[in-house]
Length: 231
Image (cartoon, rainbow, N blue to C red; front, side, top):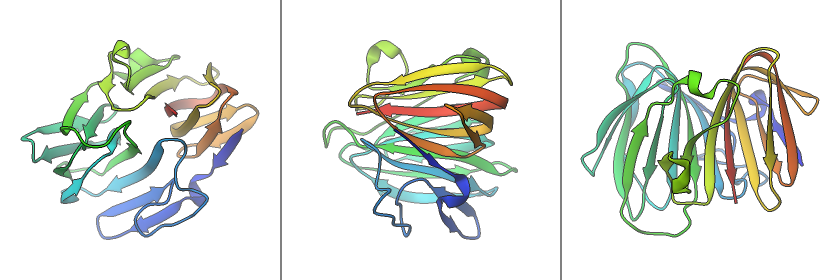
């Protein structure tokens, strides 16, 4: 089953520095039909104005993946980590038993990003953070594993039986994906336009997929896809 989530139908929030669209219930946006998909709990599409961002705040018992689409985000946390993640790259924070962090757009341009939260396999444990570069050329016409609960994937580690994948497609290219029985897929088109199993999706549209389901993406315009596959 495929449930298309159009960008203009998402939950929204806006203040003087943040323009956010919520694929699932978050903060003051509540939709009982959109409380998550499998272990995926949050997918926020954020635009952060220059020299602003999220001040120090706490999290616990959540795997938080940040995919930067434009600009860069600077992370700092109570574990002593500090890092700047640029467009196309990814950072992961395992909140564990608890951590304080800030996410700041220190740039002179707007930063846009996806923030993805996945529930962990078990609660507690030490928090952790990491970031990695993922050149778009390395995922041209194919899936690249950006974060995973399987060490064999050699991706950023998350504490759940899940994968976060990315792919870029040139216009006219196709790419397949199989969501297995008992698993849940969710993807958002970061850029471009694709036809998915006969349905056209545009930039920042998303879709919830319940396995088993065979997917074929056909790029109508150069496209960038971010995909979560989880239990």
